[in-house]
Length: 454
Image (cartoon, rainbow, N blue to C red; front, side):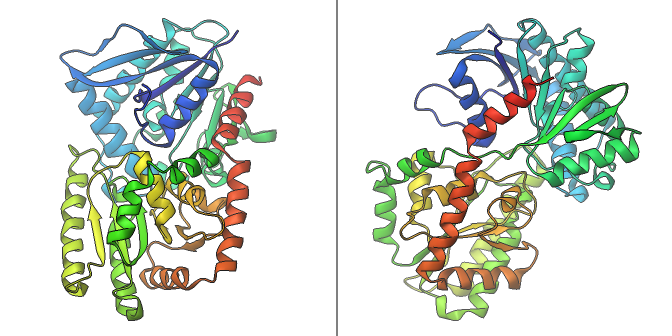
């Protein structure tokens, strides 16, 4: 029987009781748990040389991990992946840095991943790679003689051609991406941007059903919006053990809760969100003393300079806003620069009367979906969602906002806090229905079926 070989930058913890890290890890783990298979990725360890570790098995999953040398880590991960690709894919080209040595390191590590896969893959296995770290992976596998069907799902956005072309190595990246048999994107906007580049810049031709003909071969493109386990999230939110912290929070917090949960990243729009919240307090003073905005932002990529800078800036902004508006018995903004496990977050989502999810650009954003899934359908909260999150395509019953519009975001917060129960129920029911149609299981099954189809 054909196996599924999943490949991602990191192999997440998969021991029972250990939380997975975000949508990518949850999606890969879900796919492998259903039918077994192989998961290949970086171990998270930096060693003297890049080396492969002995295989280990956890349940039906065989894990093959690679340690990276300091040079490979710096050039592949800190360099090209996160200093060049990540900001560009999120339209933050002013923050992007490019170095040809970093691009060489990126290709070198893609070659390492391809070598690891080529040594364990069988002729009928399906190979499913994930995200922007592995754009050159299929090209490396083809060079090694692997003829299996290979798919890539891009969890991030794919930008308009003019933006992508700011990367000096853009042509080489596109050629490498076209070595995949299937390219999956979060939204039609992302898929169209890639297709436009191939047709207008690479001389390709568009066929039926998302097929592209370019560089002497054909590949398929498709839209596969990633979802969540809706019922599982609700169960976690209502579990009596999990609810202890939420109950304690509700006891100590008399105010209505506005909640945001984001990895500390410039693409998440935290600076703009803090400014919009300040505008909200200015223009709608009737809410002062009655609401608390809690921003949970666990640090990430702390060895990358822009991430250290945004952490310092947000800490200063939170202090300034609280200094301006706080009272003896009220602190308007609670900024927590740490992470929490899912069994803590889901009940917090359920307690929040407003979920504030306003990235400047996001491939999907599963926090928005988890917030809706965690809510009580009989008395749900309101989702305020950036129009530039991939989730906005499906969750159009949220209050959609432009994260660059301070006044608009402030007005949306006021409207969310004033929304009648019947309207809240109608909006929540509409979004929950869409999320059941586009669940995590559905995402997995649709991508696998498309990858199996020649």
